[in-house]
Image (tube, rainbow, N blue to C red):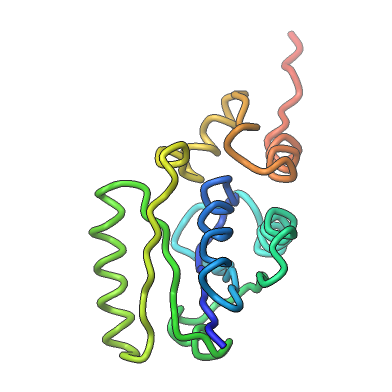
Length: 164
Protein backbone atom coordinates (compact mmCIF):
# COMPACT_ATOMS: atom_id res chain seq x y z
CA UNK A 1 0.00 0.00 0.00
CA UNK A 2 1.39 3.42 -0.99
CA UNK A 3 0.84 5.86 1.88
CA UNK A 4 1.80 9.53 1.68
CA UNK A 5 1.81 12.42 4.11
CA UNK A 6 0.81 15.93 3.05
CA UNK A 7 2.07 18.05 5.98
CA UNK A 8 1.37 21.69 6.72
CA UNK A 9 0.13 24.19 9.23
CA UNK A 10 -3.09 24.74 7.22
CA UNK A 11 -3.86 28.03 9.01
CA UNK A 12 -6.29 28.10 7.31
CA UNK A 13 -6.69 25.41 4.68
CA UNK A 14 -7.22 26.92 1.21
CA UNK A 15 -8.67 25.73 -2.09
CA UNK A 16 -5.04 25.39 -3.22
CA UNK A 17 -4.38 22.92 -0.38
CA UNK A 18 -7.53 21.00 -1.28
CA UNK A 19 -6.48 20.87 -4.95
CA UNK A 20 -3.09 19.38 -4.00
CA UNK A 21 -4.82 16.91 -1.65
CA UNK A 22 -7.25 15.79 -4.38
CA UNK A 23 -4.46 15.23 -6.86
CA UNK A 24 -2.25 13.44 -4.32
CA UNK A 25 -5.19 11.25 -3.26
CA UNK A 26 -5.38 10.03 -6.86
CA UNK A 27 -1.69 9.04 -6.79
CA UNK A 28 -1.59 7.18 -3.48
CA UNK A 29 -3.66 4.47 -1.83
CA UNK A 30 -3.88 6.50 1.35
CA UNK A 31 -3.11 10.17 2.00
CA UNK A 32 -2.75 11.63 5.47
CA UNK A 33 -2.97 15.39 5.85
CA UNK A 34 -0.74 16.13 8.79
CA UNK A 35 -1.59 19.31 10.64
CA UNK A 36 1.61 20.44 12.32
CA UNK A 37 0.81 21.38 15.89
CA UNK A 38 3.50 23.94 16.64
CA UNK A 39 4.87 25.68 13.54
CA UNK A 40 7.07 28.76 13.95
CA UNK A 41 4.20 30.95 12.80
CA UNK A 42 1.60 33.24 14.28
CA UNK A 43 -1.46 30.99 14.22
CA UNK A 44 -5.01 32.25 13.92
CA UNK A 45 -6.66 28.87 14.55
CA UNK A 46 -5.93 26.31 17.26
CA UNK A 47 -4.70 22.87 16.29
CA UNK A 48 -8.15 21.41 16.96
CA UNK A 49 -9.81 24.06 14.79
CA UNK A 50 -7.34 23.51 11.95
CA UNK A 51 -7.82 19.74 12.08
CA UNK A 52 -11.60 20.17 12.02
CA UNK A 53 -11.50 22.61 9.08
CA UNK A 54 -9.15 20.36 7.08
CA UNK A 55 -11.39 17.35 7.78
CA UNK A 56 -14.41 19.27 6.48
CA UNK A 57 -12.50 20.51 3.43
CA UNK A 58 -11.38 17.01 2.33
CA UNK A 59 -14.40 15.00 3.52
CA UNK A 60 -15.23 14.16 -0.12
CA UNK A 61 -11.95 12.23 -0.51
CA UNK A 62 -12.47 8.66 0.75
CA UNK A 63 -8.79 7.70 1.01
CA UNK A 64 -7.76 10.82 2.96
CA UNK A 65 -7.46 11.15 6.72
CA UNK A 66 -6.41 14.13 8.84
CA UNK A 67 -4.22 13.99 11.94
CA UNK A 68 -2.35 16.49 14.09
CA UNK A 69 1.32 15.89 14.86
CA UNK A 70 4.05 17.64 16.81
CA UNK A 71 7.22 15.66 16.09
CA UNK A 72 9.64 15.94 13.17
CA UNK A 73 7.82 15.33 9.91
CA UNK A 74 10.04 12.35 9.03
CA UNK A 75 9.19 10.79 12.39
CA UNK A 76 5.47 11.24 11.70
CA UNK A 77 5.93 9.72 8.23
CA UNK A 78 7.36 6.60 9.88
CA UNK A 79 4.65 6.58 12.55
CA UNK A 80 1.88 6.41 9.93
CA UNK A 81 3.73 3.85 7.78
CA UNK A 82 4.23 6.23 4.84
CA UNK A 83 7.15 6.42 2.42
CA UNK A 84 6.26 9.69 0.69
CA UNK A 85 5.88 13.35 1.62
CA UNK A 86 3.67 15.44 -0.67
CA UNK A 87 4.37 19.14 -1.10
CA UNK A 88 2.71 21.77 -3.27
CA UNK A 89 4.73 24.29 -5.25
CA UNK A 90 3.11 27.62 -6.03
CA UNK A 91 6.03 29.60 -7.45
CA UNK A 92 9.77 29.51 -7.98
CA UNK A 93 10.57 30.72 -4.48
CA UNK A 94 8.70 27.71 -3.05
CA UNK A 95 11.05 25.41 -4.95
CA UNK A 96 14.17 26.52 -3.08
CA UNK A 97 12.61 25.99 0.35
CA UNK A 98 11.00 22.68 -0.62
CA UNK A 99 14.23 21.47 -2.22
CA UNK A 100 16.16 22.20 0.99
CA UNK A 101 13.50 20.46 3.11
CA UNK A 102 13.44 17.44 0.80
CA UNK A 103 17.21 17.07 1.02
CA UNK A 104 17.13 17.38 4.82
CA UNK A 105 14.32 14.83 5.11
CA UNK A 106 16.17 12.46 2.79
CA UNK A 107 19.28 12.84 4.92
CA UNK A 108 17.26 12.10 8.07
CA UNK A 109 15.64 9.07 6.45
CA UNK A 110 16.79 7.94 2.97
CA UNK A 111 13.69 5.70 2.66
CA UNK A 112 11.37 8.71 2.40
CA UNK A 113 10.79 10.43 -0.94
CA UNK A 114 9.30 13.87 -1.48
CA UNK A 115 6.76 14.31 -4.27
CA UNK A 116 6.11 17.90 -5.35
CA UNK A 117 2.95 18.83 -7.21
CA UNK A 118 2.68 22.12 -9.06
CA UNK A 119 -0.22 24.26 -7.95
CA UNK A 120 -3.05 24.83 -10.34
CA UNK A 121 -2.55 28.25 -11.98
CA UNK A 122 -5.67 29.69 -10.35
CA UNK A 123 -4.26 28.96 -6.87
CA UNK A 124 -0.62 29.94 -7.34
CA UNK A 125 -0.90 33.28 -5.59
CA UNK A 126 -2.97 32.06 -2.63
CA UNK A 127 -1.23 31.77 0.72
CA UNK A 128 -2.76 31.34 4.14
CA UNK A 129 -0.93 34.46 5.35
CA UNK A 130 -2.27 36.59 2.52
CA UNK A 131 -5.79 35.23 3.04
CA UNK A 132 -5.70 36.15 6.72
CA UNK A 133 -4.65 39.71 5.83
CA UNK A 134 -7.50 40.07 3.33
CA UNK A 135 -10.03 38.59 5.77
CA UNK A 136 -8.80 40.81 8.62
CA UNK A 137 -9.33 43.82 6.37
CA UNK A 138 -12.90 42.75 5.66
CA UNK A 139 -12.24 41.45 2.16
CA UNK A 140 -14.18 38.60 0.59
CA UNK A 141 -12.11 35.38 0.63
CA UNK A 142 -14.92 33.00 -0.35
CA UNK A 143 -13.39 32.11 -3.74
CA UNK A 144 -10.06 31.18 -2.12
CA UNK A 145 -11.17 28.92 0.73
CA UNK A 146 -13.70 26.14 1.33
CA UNK A 147 -17.03 27.41 2.69
CA UNK A 148 -16.33 26.05 6.18
CA UNK A 149 -13.15 28.15 6.32
CA UNK A 150 -14.89 31.31 5.10
CA UNK A 151 -17.43 30.93 7.91
CA UNK A 152 -14.69 30.23 10.49
CA UNK A 153 -12.69 33.26 9.35
CA UNK A 154 -15.71 35.53 9.69
CA UNK A 155 -16.40 34.24 13.20
CA UNK A 156 -12.76 34.46 14.27
CA UNK A 157 -12.11 37.90 12.81
CA UNK A 158 -15.47 39.56 13.44
CA UNK A 159 -15.05 43.01 14.89
CA UNK A 160 -18.17 44.89 15.90
CA UNK A 161 -18.53 48.33 14.35
CA UNK A 162 -17.16 51.13 16.49
CA UNK A 163 -19.70 53.46 18.01
CA UNK A 164 -18.85 57.10 18.59
